[in-house]
Image (tube, rainbow, N blue to C red; front, side, top):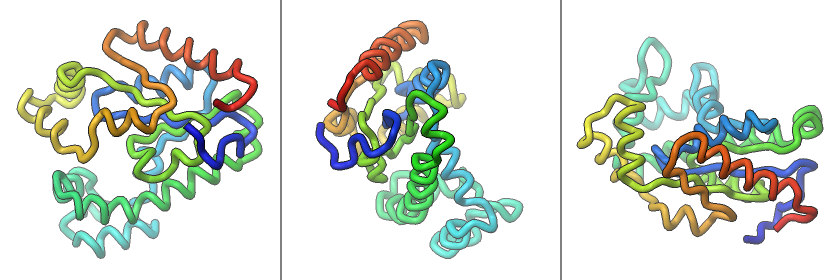
Length: 213
């Protein structure tokens, strides 16, 4: 997969994404343990909607005071509004994505970060949708069979099987769409040891490569 921005940064930049329950967070933790600097897009988006930040006023203006709890934006209330409502979800993304992308680029051009770590990972569930894959040398997608993802979501979030199924069915993309944007697909259908071994092999091959592929 060719991208115009390959090799733009002094360290390899890996974009990590995947659907809920696939194991993306576990993969990011493994990569951090291998020495990578992790840019957590979820963490950045949480910070972007805090009171006093520009996105806060835009979100309240677009969705109303009903999204607030104690003066802060309640992500659960906001999520209920955009759940399975693609136009409203896109409106929210148009507010948040530029802020997250801006902070991501600031870190990618931070000399201390880019000279202190052997590689950088952009951990983002909406990596492709936000266009951040254009700043990655590689895109890795972490996937698992639907029944495995459903079981993980039930255990992680304390949901019933029906609720977990609804969450998985609420997305507007499928695994095939994600994989079509990937340089590598990591099948996370085993345990953490198996996932760690897969990531380690892939990372070692990536860092050994003398040119971007």
